[in-house]
Amino acid sequence: MPDFQIGEKVALVTGGATGIGLEYVRYLLQHGLKNAVVEGCLLAFKYMSKHYGGNGGVVVNAGSILSLREFSGCPIYTGTKHFIVGLTKSFGTPYFLNLTGVRFLTMCPGVTYTPLISEAGRFALTDFPKIAEILVQDLGSYPAQQPEDVAQGLITMITKGENGSVWVSEGGEPVYEVILPDLKTWRKK
Image 1 (cartoon, rainbow, N blue to C red):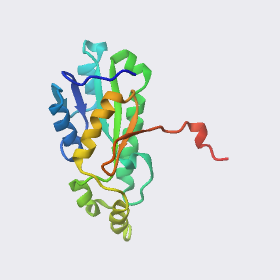
Image 2: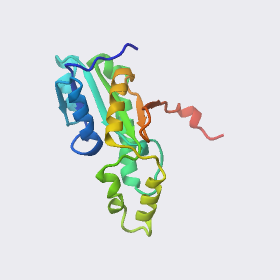
Image 3: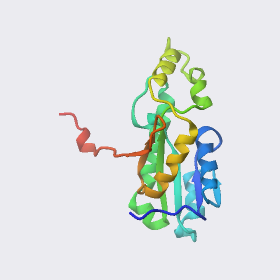
Image 4: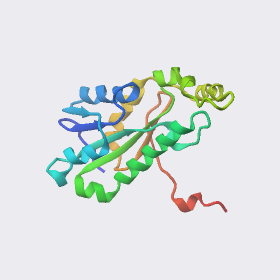
């Protein structure tokens, strides 16, 4: 796949109000994007879709490393992050790309120094003994990174990532794409 050029494009970033999403917006604007919109995927179709007279574009949805695994410390948050991957992969199919010219990608950051992490214990379910302690302890077992580390990987993901792809940024290392297994490979034998 040829590299995708990001200059003079419109980017839609969900979750761009704080933390990693905000860093995405700042970084993209610094690298030549005309605009960064914090709305929803359907607005991307409305304003970027070739089907409606736009030029196509890229939507980056902010997942989490928890989009790809279970996590007892915060099951509701984890479930919402699983949703992000499912939604993005569903919009990231050939049908939508061919019709609209809009690519969909998911960035799944690992533990990143943001208020969400530093205040994580406050978000734990209240009716379960020691769940806040488990949450904080489990998060502490992952390699941490700065929001800027995630944002730098965003450019790689946008320029190299195929439609519907899922990428991970963790521990300040280079981003990498993850391949979700085919359903038949998950079948218990």
